[in-house]
Length: 281
Ligand SMILES: CCCCC/C=C\C/C=C\CCC/C=C/C(=O)SCCNC(=O)CCNC(=O)[C@H](O)C(C)(C)COP(=O)(O)OP(=O)(O)OC[C@H]1O[C@@H](n2cnc3c(N)ncnc32)[C@H](O)[C@@H]1OP(=O)(O)O
Figure 1 (cartoon, rainbow, N blue to C red):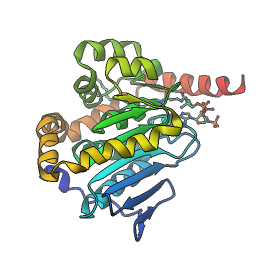
Figure 2 (cartoon, rainbow, N blue to C red):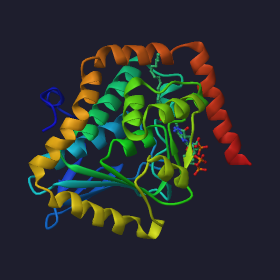
Figure 3 (cartoon, helix red, strand yellow):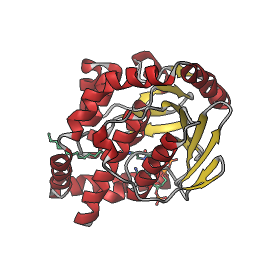
């Protein structure tokens, strides 16, 4: 179901499958063939930050699950306590190797296109903080359940960087234009309750209940005839995905040019310093 454009990219194989279990160093996946539900746990310590290899692993996992005829739905969650994903690994953008920076952004685009357009039903069980790229993963799923007392949002401006147009589009499609405009300008990180109120997440349950709630909701999704459900999703999302598909190369170049600016490097260095200082307090 994912567009033929997406099918052109053959991902690097780093995920191993043992029966109904798939493993990589950063991801643990199990598939319940009775229900057709896969559970993917992100486990790139300490904060599930998204570096090049992790992004490739996430994408490979989705591709492998799409090829499994018994798999209809995917629940995404974190194995790292209190953190769903800290977003992009800032070290990929700070003092980067230019070639790797290109590859990194391409991997982020490809992971996003795969996740956003997958014919699998997807639910994010957000069991920890979910800033920036973590928020992107969450809003790319079909349904979001979040545990209390965490934060989620596109906080890029706080780092002195800009969310690209496809992050903005995914956010607009979730909470609407005006809320996205405010959120991007202020780099807003929503509390769980605010996120529920704004429709950034669909449900709030305790951390203890989150997996059960995700399974229950997923059973609702996988009960719907697969093709009809997947085509409805395509109908809603194809236009947004196509906008990136048709400009992937220039988007990579814009990102690289943006990152290499002295001002941006200074801002990222400052933000990293603040993160370390906060830790030592
Ligand atoms: C019109 C033209 C436009 C052109 C635009 C073109 C292109 C667009 C350009 C750029 C777009 C980039 C989009 C970016 C997206 C992102 O995702 S940026 C990342 C944003 N993420 C954050 O701000 C999260 C920062 N982290 C935290 O807030 C906290 O770490 C936490 C996640 C809440 C967890 O807190 P805690 O449990 O207390 O853990 P620590 O803070 O102690 O962190 C542990 C170690 O991990 C390091 N770390 C944390 N986050 C990251 C990260 N994202 N990347 C790399 N490293 C991270 C942290 O420094 C600690 O490291 P040490 O143990 O001290 O070594």
